[in-house]
Length: 289
Image (cartoon, rainbow, N blue to C red; front, side, top):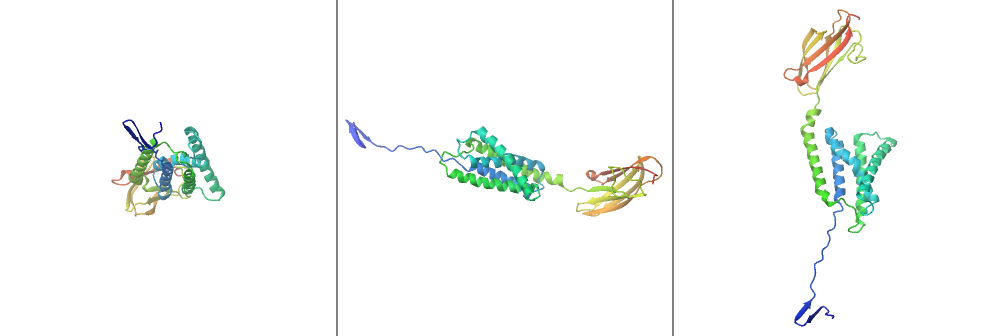
């Protein structure tokens, strides 16, 4: 019995009712590429804008980016559809292409006569990754709604949360710890009559004095109490003051009396600042000049 759009059978009347159609939401085909670009900006900031960042912060962001990001977007350019590769194949291809991209950049820079430095390597890798990301997005837009490959949505919050936590820890470590680790410290060294010792801690037969150099990179005057001993016996002591941001030179007597191999030690102590203590040691044959 054909009821048409509206009809009745006995005491019942039928009419067509609209049935809601469930539409599958369009996947976010951009979030994984945005993740790659975000990581690239973090690496660029640590290696180029902030070149003195603490090493662990640079490694925590730079190593995952270099090993996965360029190859991942390159694989998206070559195989943009989800059915092209399974997860294991895509991960292996991303790793291989990333290593090839990094090696190719280093080789290309050397062939072009550009000095390979962390800054040039990172800038080149970032430019390559950015270009490949744009190509991957263009290829994805040409596909149907359900065709492009994207990372599983269940990983989205985990990955972004991990990256944000990593960035926060790197920034906090770099801002709080790195300045103390990388702060310039005073340096001290000995130069003999013939220049620097030919071998560590060994100097040619002395001419009675050696030159003591102290570098003070701080913004305050550095005061040292210098004490020299020969074979354990004190032979010289003096107060030394080096102005701020200067390298100072002092003449220090070196005993020449006696024979045999002698060990000369110079201890520099800064009152109230034990971390600035410096020890210098020389071995020479006294009296052989």
